[in-house]
Length: 124
Image 1 (tube, one colour):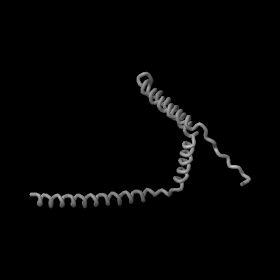
Image 2 (cartoon, rainbow, N blue to C red):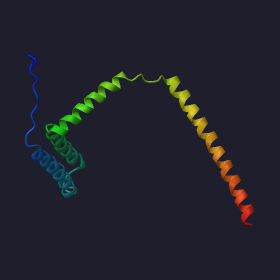
Image 3 (cartoon, rainbow, N blue to C red):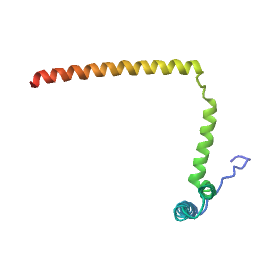
Image 4 (cartoon, helix red, strand yellow):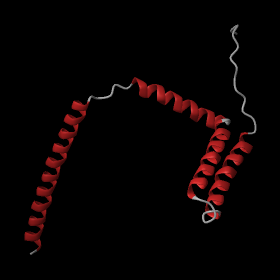
């Protein structure tokens, strides 16, 4: 056993927390449609954003929500490691892909026209 203690986060009442998340989302949707004609769109959007952030906060405090948050943080670290292509490389790749698509379209058109011509000769 190691001398250092690893503190594990304990998640309690996850089922209840997910019910709160569902109630917040459902309540926000119902309230938004119910008050559609009474309040300006800006106020409804602001309230929905607050309710959404509250639901996200409660969801992140569950085991699965925390695992998802950790996954998002790990994905952000991996995105920083990506070597993105330069503008010239992107342009060249786009032109190559466009050219291949045009050539494939011409080949498929010719194949379709040829097979259609043969089928019309056989049927007639």
